[in-house]
Image 1 (cartoon, rainbow, N blue to C red):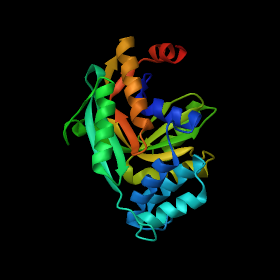
Image 2 (tube, one colour):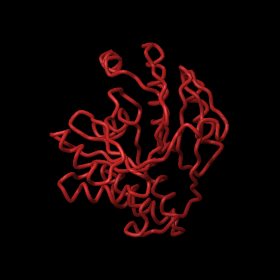
Image 3 (spheres, helix red, strand yellow):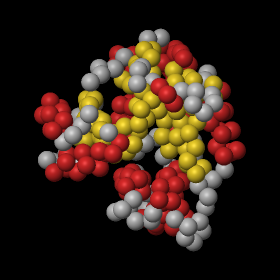
Image 4 (cartoon, rainbow, N blue to C red):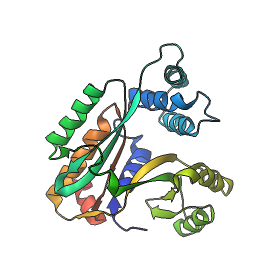
Amino acid sequence: MSGHSKWASIKHQKGIKDARRGASFTKFAALISVAARGGADPSTNFKLRLAVDLARKSAVPNANIERAIKRGSGGEGSANFEEVMYEGYGPGGTAIMVETATDNRNRTGAEVRAAFTKHGGNLGTSGSVAYQFTQRGAIVVPAKDLDQATMDAIEAGAEDVEEGEGQLLVYTKPTDLDLVRKALAEVGYEAQKAELSWEPNTTVEVVDEATARKIMKLMDAMEELDDVTGTYSNFDIAPELMDILEAS
């Protein structure tokens, strides 16, 4: 359990509080369409179920969700969406992975590159930073008693937990995500969010305020792009420095 504000915990808390910054209906439609390539039934396609759940929690209309499923599964108005991962470096030598769902690689690549360049980063080649991350399940649950919630999460099969303001971020093996989510629900913890995430193996501590500001501006810019469905980084900003950034 870390006492620092890593991007994973910052992002998840921002997502719950702000309905995920920059998350347009277009973003969710692309995410659902990609997931639906593995089957149009959320009950048998776990990846699609995660995408649909996330969309519903962000108030995406059911009609939009159904259209996106049809497009992705080859139905009426089908579109050739694909998942593309971009890798690069941010200010302070931080590693960044940007997950996208796109029907136009040229457009998406140009937008991601522009965001990196504008905010002091550099787009890298495939594999340039991916080795620094490991895929894990991530579940956000509300919790009044964090100590008790931590114990319950571990009993449910969690690999690790991170405490937030009134909530717990629970990490699992990728294959255990749904099992742990259901186990938590059985003891009273209804997930606010559950997804597969890329978590850093080690972190880069950021202590300079100017560098921290640049990093946050870059990550926010990436999140605002419609084709971006996930952002991951290995920076580690101390809570007191995050308080300064949020206050100004």
